[in-house]
Length: 345
Length: 221
Ligand SMILES: C[S@@+](CC[C@H](N)C(=O)[O-])C[C@H]1O[C@@H](n2cnc3c(N)ncnc32)[C@H](O)[C@@H]1O
Image (tube, rainbow over the protein chains, first blue to last red):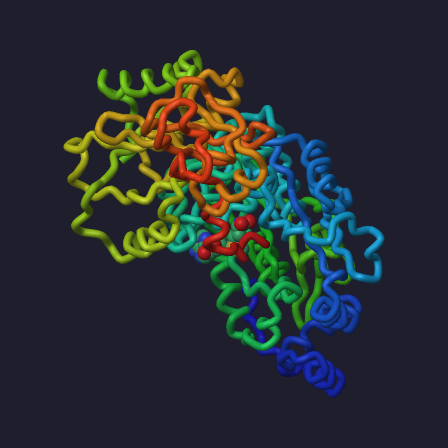
């Protein structure tokens, strides 16, 4: 069954219009959000508050274990006056922002941004949302496995560098990035983080089959409409149209099909986006699993987040879609994010 | 074009460099590949041009190659090349067979038969030979911070150095905690590098310049 994406006007009502006006969004976005985002109004309020009071914002760093031990890093940053909170992943810390209200916690008032410390320039950490780290964590990489991994949409390399770290710089990573403008940042980040085991190809993920390589693991951090980073980029309240979601969805379906072709039997693929849209998430997975004739694909449970949708508007997805996970800023203090973990049988 | 170290000359240049920096023993353990530096590229496609433009914006940042995109004829003619280390044999073979845009970690360049190390090479040295028996300087905090802004080094900020520094010599710039923060070139020899109120070492490459030039919003992903 192929899902034809429906234009979402039928969701519009007075309430959604009022919210859209109050918070400055396009109507169609809010009317959709109300259908699937738990406590939508709290999310909208949360995003507004980030505007006014930076302290509700969230920022995470991931230790680069290829260069430094996470406890040593933590100690160095704490000595400089940063407040670091542990998270559910080892070596990933939340940088606690302080306001004048809790200024007792500020050890030094003139702290530079976390992106301009010596430790940052040395490549001791990467500024990376917890959601992104969780996606890589689902790839189940053990440092002693000598495996081949595909990072299908790689620039600027946040997840590539984490994968390399999990592989302890062994094995092989193939990183694809079709946009030549985005390649220098990828090369730079790999270099800054001391990554050796990666080869970069300036190709579309759809062409990866031409390399004639089969992969043990694949990460498809798909190009998407980026709704989930509204907290970081407020222009997205108005700048996107439903057409953008449609275009992304079509591209994502093509990419995930290409990915499955090059995944080894028993290999794991993680698909993720920083979008809320079901058309870019559950619908992409549902269509892949239903339509892929060559092999069985299992949707395995992702550990953290709220269960993926099994229905949306007029769509019914496979019940296994509940194994995918959604993350929301107002619930998880992360970017809006979607993670699916698939295993090819 | 990526290729293996194939000529005696290439091998000698590299071995000599490793030896000069006191890390000869690790040479054989590394999986090294080379890429010829394409001096003039006549026929670039538009995607190559995009890439080249972006790379130019990183100029002076010797972390990354700015001369990439080999054209098809080239380069057996030129003897200048970049030096990369791969993780393993499978990777280097793959790089040679499939010629990706980049593979492994660039550790320097060979130009006119001379090896020019970059910061990755400096880190390799420090990790494998912490005895500091090679050209280096240690800077006090303020001087070290200025280096991160791309500034050259004043004699008064040097609080430690290798005893036999020659004029015009490549050296590793360290901060007080002995971490690599850059690569420099001496303008004087020995004690003269500590002369007051004078730039005594030129900053060739430092870990800060790129970021200060270009705030990286895309880091947030
Ligand atoms: C969400 S970003 C990836 C972020 C990256 N994984 C990270 O963690 O730093 C998506 C990337 O996909 C790239 N892209 C766009 N179309 C693509 C395609 N057809 N195949 C592969 N990558 C594509 C974009 O240029 C962009 O760099």
